[in-house]
Figure (tube, one colour):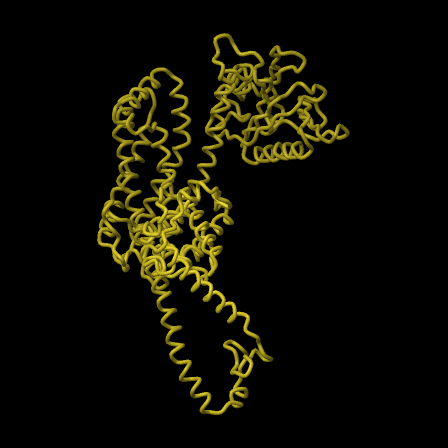
Length: 622
């Protein structure tokens, strides 16, 4: 054994020590193998890279305590199983439990840990192993005691001999027909009854007696591996059940806090905002959560490998569907109501007083943070139920119930997800209202209420005005409006520097305008007209042909969707309604085109003077 090999091992040992310190944030001594022997640090490192890859980590209760040895073996086995299943490290490259627990073969352990770190880096982990060490860092971290160097030399020699023997076995010369030279057929080679007749009976009996112990060893090894997988899966099931219990306890506490600290004080001020329906649904959800928590505490408190959880959730799926679908239906309108109410001084003062109270201020959460919790809860149930089902053994009595409960919750989660997407689109509408301010809601625009339950955000893009390369215009496409605007070049007097103030340039309705490409100008121009071949309202230039084609396609799709969904009491009258409000491009003065409403349409609108002012059906109808 050369000194060079010993020095290489010490350098790799120091490199892994620095890498592990970086990953776990724990400072290690030069002789750190005692700290790794219980498997806790290795499990922590694995969890940093692959979340939920370790089902359970048993830690010492105090600084002077140690982990029981049977739990140490579980920690190390969980780490090795994660190396195999998550990082796909070949089993022949992994150390045995006692190699680390008893420091029986540190060389093999370090070899496996280098596989672990390198495969983690290949899987996207951002912290690679150090490739070069300065002399100062090496001397500060190396452990070169004479007795230890002798042990390392001996283990290196044994490791190299084992590796060479394995290589010789793998490269053993093969004879014709898959036979070893001068021997019986190789295991797995094609063997027929005619082949066996070539050998004397006493030879076959000797081979059979020799194979029987080998078969027993193989069967024992398979049984041990299956048992270890079962132990890991059972530990994972218990871990998921504990997570179900702790998260449900936190959720139930938060819902009670919402009712007591927010909704109850606001109930006395119903003249500011009506939260009665929301409060009733939240009470029902809180009662459901309390009952579920009570049953989970009973089941998890008496946990065993035969314990059932799926039937508990299966009993609540009908109530989940009733309560949470009702909640999601009122959630988006209620958020819009709260946004508008916060802009009014009486409600703003009331909600600020509540949020500054000692009980609420200590949590650091606002009313909207608690209102989003029921929306997020059902997807969490689905994740936990699927996770537990994934780690439940075939034939377990809980497996079918877990699958049914997860599927039922998944249907509710799909409904919530659709509503959540609508809510995000609605939030964009609120942001536009804050961006443009009161300019959107004027008699001239005809949009008397910009934030409406049916209105959804679709897309936005900035373009250059054709023929004016220095003039930009932003287009905000909603499902029933096209808002065109640009930032103010000069901020108003007294306006904060960080405030963003925009001007409305024009408001168009996708239902009544036509968008088409303009060829011959670099394939980037398009125009928006009142009708096909009608007056051109906007002529714009995109950054590229792809952006132009994408935007025109979105405009056409939006027009088709509005045509499908909009219901009119008089389609003929609707087609005649001018519904374009635009500002002249020539100057910055507002030049709104007031629509000339025919008498029959004016009578239909109830005598209203504006397009949307009278609550007509041109997109402002609910």
